[in-house]
Image (spheres, rainbow, N blue to C red):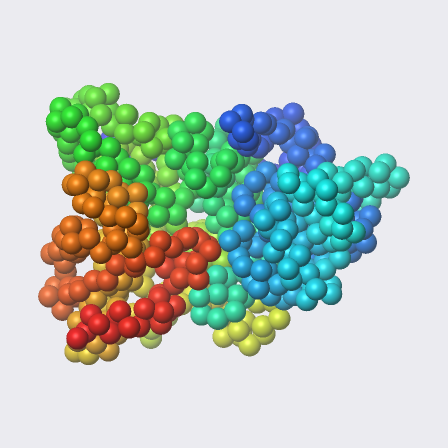
Length: 618
């Protein structure tokens, strides 16, 4: 992408970096090759702590030995109920090194969900993060006769616990040390006995349309996919990644943990979800993968900071981003960038754009990766204007992560790029549905052969449920989920995601669900960005006492109406949104309306707020 970015450092590598035909084999080969190098860092109580590959190996060996000593057999399942912490990775690799199947459970899941997931996966050992997660496990333990042991990662507040079914991670490691001393070859024998065709991990879908389904990924598929990622995205041992998305989600498990295991990139774990913005600035990752919600939040933060800046700073930013946009437009169009424009961009970087990048924490980033949900093309262009390429990838739990990706040398905002070289992607000629085939595709759903048969054809094509189009260059664009397409009472087909993405580009809107199937016009349910709307209310002297009163304030209603008007201007009259409703409760990941990745569940929201929706049509 000549003219603005040096793409030489973004070119993917096509060589095999690490040998091994199973994940544990690959890990132990990596330890041998990279032993004293730092692999993981985590901030705790304000201090960063590092672990080398050798130190990680010690923990993994002890956990694996401890599991074997407890009677954990090859093919047994262990589940991990924890936030994204270093110990999650230890437990995962320990389970796999013991020849087991590793399953992740979201830390926000309710006890009933924990019970279902442990029962469905036939979990023998459950790793829990702390006392809060232990409470969930103990609440449902009586309904899980197959659960033999609960292992607690962090025993703070549990020192006096006396329960034969519960053990601390440290105690498990002590057991492992003793077992490994008596049986020095036991763990290595389990690793060697692990076959490429063995089941490695379970990744449960979010269950927006019923009970979660356990997607089965075999070792051969995982190894094939991380090798494939190396031909899609450039990453080496010199790179620093930030590990903060849930590790039980396919994006962080594959694109974070396993891809870093393969390439040797450093994994930096954030303190907790609330400290992400400050941790980004400290880590300054060179490769940064996140979901659109994170990129939207960073953009909103910059816009809000600008409003508080003096007029000189505002003018300098406006000029600088204007220069960046002019160059980005030329580069995206494939046109050359003249010397004078390049010079102006260097000045713009010094005066404004470098500061914006530092404010976000992307000043060292060679490129950004976005995926897991659609993103506004305007947002991609904004990051490009700052001088950082943003590459959109598309994939799902069932494809083992990314199946398409935008190459750095030819970015098309709004596109998810061509098919990755390691799999085939095509559109169903009748429905426009995305179909994927390759060794990266999962082996089916655990205990659900009929769901597997619905999703996987006999000749290996995966039905994704996403619909879209493809251009002459082979670049795909998703228009929507098949089941989300709206057909209005007038017979007009509308893809709600385009409208929703434009609304989410607003710093005041976190999420939006467009309604209108078989109805006369479109309406929308909006979740406001609490922090930014509160700031707006305080600056404008709008009185409010709590979240509900904030959403009901006439000034806030007018603010959201103005954002709606802005978006409506881009669409034909039949596609415009006529009315909106603001969710009056502040939602968190614990609420049933939100997925663990903080997206509103369309069907559930439509059902739960049926009365409010009906009111918008009267």
